[in-house]
Image (cartoon, rainbow, N blue to C red; front, side, top):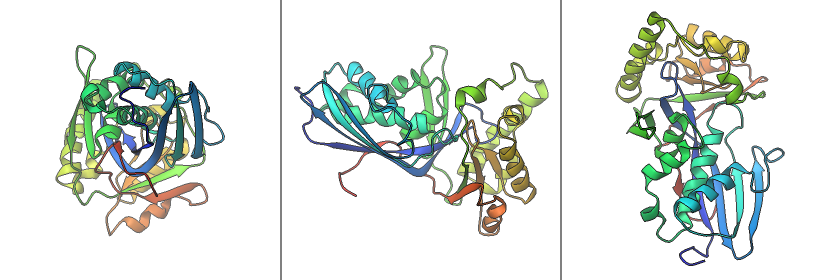
Length: 305
């Protein structure tokens, strides 16, 4: 296994919240909740997968595991052969809750494979990672934030390549994630999207998306207006009525709130005067957690606790 590191390699990758109200399939915010991935190449063929935490009772333990598939695609892209490896996943990102677990698995797996190769960064740049991830996750909002951290705006150009602008979120941006017990697949949620929108809806969301960039990076007091959406949240009401009811209650209380990604989690933005009102979420039905914006995306870290 020439060029393959013999020691174990560890990568952490953050959760992400996409859309953030109006910026459908384009805006992403990395959150300081991390999946922790460790891998080591072996001489034997095949994979041995260990999973703890989220998904430990449901995800595959073989080549069908999403992290394994992402790693294999990265090894192919780097033109290196790794017959087998051991993979350990300690997952903290909820699955099927609109917090980017699939994007984290894909980006984390690619970055992990790159770290296992001596000259991996030369063979696979961050732009290459983004394109490889896009092949598995056809909308770039979550994958861009998972790779780069912070606040990102991502898009796909006319040639089908993803690109991203990364910005530092304002220090006053304080997200609160509210995670229900039930899950919702992104594929199912996307079937409920409208095939067309009115000129008014498009105009409102374009203006709010532009304002969202300013609000998240320069002036968080504008987040209430900046997180208004007229296109995707209401159209998926049947999939997550409790989420929309919570969003409405929070906004009525003066707290900017949105459905996180495809849902059903809710993301709110609080300050010192509104933080206590996030308890509008019934804690018997929702896990309420204030989380920081993650300034970094998927990255190699030392082994250890």
